[in-house]
Image (cartoon, rainbow, N blue to C red; front, side, top):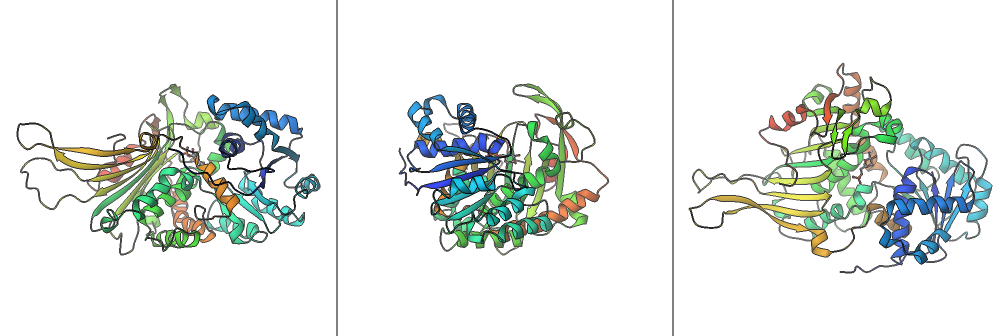
Length: 490
Ligand code: BG6
């Protein structure tokens, strides 16, 4: 099946942090794929900006390497590759000094009316400064927009500072706060599942749903990102943004339209309804962990402390917590969230666990709950676990089986990377899948007390062996309530 590609107007894509990891791993491959599919029109340019001196040819070589590393060989046709590399420019700019801004202006002024996307793939400390200098250099035109990567701030106060600084140069409708989870196909499918079907919505509430689980498990460690990661930790890196956004999409009321502010208004209401986890409850409702050495599918792996190069860090690489959305729809329904690095398998999924039947007519036979499993990665798809009669003679035995819809099998298409969709949305000026300022700040309002309590606690994160499902306290967190974490692939 081939989806219809609607091309976007030509644009200048200015990537600050142009030689960094994000540009190399995600942005160049995403732009390449969109170009390959014919969605990008001439004379679109990609202008990489960074501190080091580099010729245009050297940057093209850098980009070619990046594409070799991140794009399958059969998707790298010579002509497509050449056309894409031809779009690339490089400008040396000092983000915190005066050097280079004039050179950048000279390149961009060749097309003053073209759509400009300023993508800040830099350390968040630079967001405000870069925006200020873009403004000063007269580079913020009517058709300009800015994309900021997460984390926006380290807590509510610093998020406000960043938002103020960016907002003093770009108005809110031109600020695209990216959360790449919202660009994942299955995450968007969650909205289709809920709001394009009449089946689930009547059951989508505390009366019929026992609890919700959201797991984002990674097998990778922090590797080359230890410097950043140690200042963040899993709560800031994953929960404040990706996991809370997933929670919002599960819990929100139906928006009036699939349109930026309608969707974001509903997500904001969920964030504001999150029951605060107060100081005294933090140890009951949250678990943080840090990985020790252990095993992965590729052999032995180091501990977090070894990857970081020092011991004594109190940064968490695992979080499990129990949240509650205190409103009419959800009161009393726990949302269990769990994320961590170096866990047993890579798997991100949302489990909607329906209530048990009120009475069994089947005597002693075990009747398990219905579960809807929305699988983000790998093997994107949706499974609805139902009880059926075990086939064959021999009486009434029951078994739980999944109605299984694997998207790869169903549609047989390449699953685009989240950045492909999101970058095109920026060019189109569609903010539906981006976070509005008030959302980011509401998320920090809920996260801050947990961070503060952890900061003051005498204890350190619980250690867990790499290749396991995290500290045993995370299992106890859910089992105390008579529930268990959904087992991968079951
Ligand atoms: C990023 C985090 O936002 O998301 C990383 O900073 C994490 O630490 C990554 O590994 C996970 O994204 P994905 O798409 O691989 O699930």
